[in-house]
Image (cartoon, rainbow, N blue to C red; front, side, top):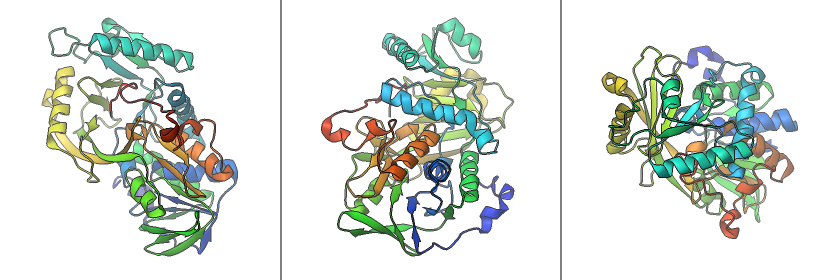
Length: 405
């Protein structure tokens, strides 16, 4: 975040006092909250909106991810919302008038076992049926696309092939947040930092206000978009969410010459690697198995992640670690998000994205804005309702989308 501040001196001092009332309040000033506010203003003409952020804008999970964007999910419902999101990504740099380094360099998901191959080929077929660009690459094609990848059959888990989505890629996460923040601000949205939500004011089962450390704000609608803390906020409002919070770790190396042409993900040895525009190697791992809210995780996860990266990319063996970090991800039973209405009238939830939160940013904002404005789910987020955990209509992406949560 520090490298962004000189470019945005206006955000250094702008911290408006909350108004007595708003048409809508969004809790969480990360990517999803900012995108929701932007699309509420742009698509639905709602501008008397406040974003309440406990810390600083994009200082939470938005700044703690591995920047990967893709839509090659298995199930129809997932493919639909992530593909809509990817199409929005493709136009956002021009729309937001901001170069946030969106790079469609493609994403490969490696297969290391016969079961991996079967599942991968199945997912490619499902993607094509849903209009999502997807290919199956054999080992020679994998090596041609990414020459630095170790495709020897002498390693622990030889590469047997890979799925490939050419339109997938990366973007600079904090720049994305600032792009949405700037446009939302231009449209009249209040961006209120250092404003912690401490409770909700209810009239019967209807939310009518938000209590904060800076006073109580009256509002007609409240949206929870605080990744990693959704269950805490829901509990304040009087209901439970079927999610668990886990640390999710990642790291970057020091700067190197550009050698890595695409994004490579391996679910089997669980590491995913890309190279940022400045030259850092960006690596992610799986979630820690325990529940927690700490923005750090167990050392053995990082150790295993780095070992897997070096096995797949021997050229990285002499790279030096620059920094590590941990985000907090909400994980549901079926590893798919909850986006829509809550048991409390006029209170809406957007949570449970697991490792899909960054790539889903514009799609989540678009559909959440529609739900808030109309009090009805958009067709794309309707399947991701809270009720599915009662009806049993789960969208089980747990392991099916090439990243096991």
